[in-house]
Length: 186
Image (spheres, rainbow, N blue to C red):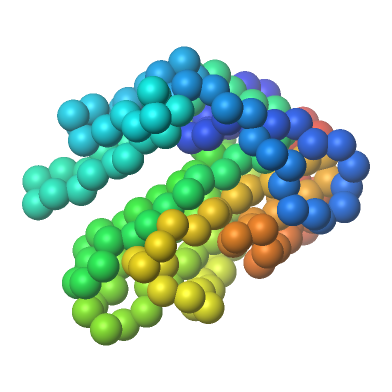
């Protein structure tokens, strides 16, 4: 990953150590202090004095936001409840992305479905513009019934994807395998 960091959609908390463990308690920061809408800001609803937001989707648009700053490493988490019913053609995403000339990205994508079919969770990572690391996962619960926690732990040694504090995928920092994180890609 190149200098400049990745933009995130949540507050970062730096972690110590290399063990894969449930993330620590996040730091509460008002949404507007750390984030800015990227489109359709009228579809972002502020709750609990700005500590939380609810994003809405209608027949014309969804919405998005990004952090005001960049992060070197951290723990990033989002509580998400997906749209029920026929959501074919809709992709809900939570991702970290670089703003440099070489595309770096770490992401969760929820692929829309036809009514009655399960949602598919897809994880992916791009490093220096190289992707093709998608992995699809069928969740063990219905993500439309309640909010669930989706987290990314990114440190010097690895990138770990969590669902409700359960690790579901690990990328070790391995430049030889084309999965280099920031520390080895320069």
